[in-house]
Image 1: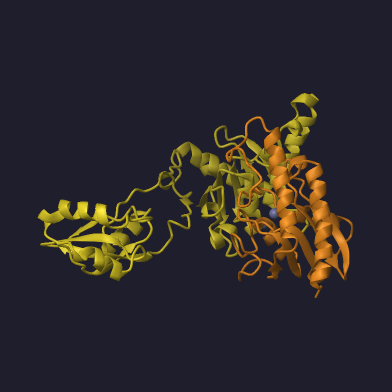
Image 2: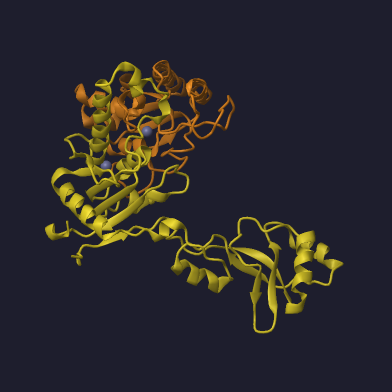
Length: 179
Length: 276
Ligand SMILES: [Zn+2]
Ligand SMILES: [Zn+2]
């Protein structure tokens, strides 16, 4: 079991991936997969670039890892560090690859599959293996990253969709289709 | 010719399947002549009913009327008695009332036995599949048997994409089909002059390329795939075989409170070639 200090170290790497997403105008969510104390996979949102609403950080990373020879069964000894609570889709994907555990930054009120909306990680009778998930690691940093994105997007958008004039404010976190 | 054996059944939403739950209200019993007097007293002195707008204020018995004073969650019995003390009204029974509105005829028949309620079925309760649509749906399900998950434009019935599952733990047919729709759009964009590319547009519309599409599958999609369909904002999902760990059967993900997009789901029987 990683210490809190080790977890924060890996979460800082996940935040670097989120920062990379932000720089390329993607919703800033990033993740790293850790096996035997080493980062073995990285991902960040690519939904805009690919026009594919399912290319979340976790799915992108898993795809790359498998493509570069990472063995499926090794996910059973692998932990995920992701800046935002996995959405229901990713939470199910992580179950299906039998991830060992998930550590996340901030919660995902709209789509969260590891507590916020559903408990895909622990509910019984679903495909794959249940896993523990714990949030709150660099939570404020993860939220700040998302806020930066939405403020920037609003400045660029000719016609803001729905929630007009999002401002830097807690509780206004909108991580639509993005994590 | 109308097809006879091909069945299309809409899968109820979690709300439509909900069992009766109740909350409690203070009531009083009066003679009918006193009604307007009591109602104006209630309006002036007692907390408004909140969240139970479907509940009728008055229940008739053979000789009397039983009237809701207010919810027990709004004030304590002690407070209520203090308010009633200087009036001509007395506290009667504490009664159960349904805490959500009935949205199906079945719920209504059960709910109203507990306390009178209004019944206004929501619009999506009355989805009708036309004869022409039945043929289209049968045809696309037959296609799905050959080609995997199929996505179509509901108005033109044009096939947008189809995909089978790949040898990969996450590349289920629905995920692959969403990916194909995206790739088609990318290819289309590449053929446009740069200024017209969607890349240059503000970003949060990406991933909505499947918005409103009909999706056909033989087997109910898993939780991952159902959430991918929610993210992609599809219109309707048709499948034949339900799955116990499927996103619809397990979580009712097509119409779950808390998710920002809902879609309709229909379970079908296996069509014959003559149905299409
Ligand atoms: Zn996700
Ligand atoms: Zn699936």
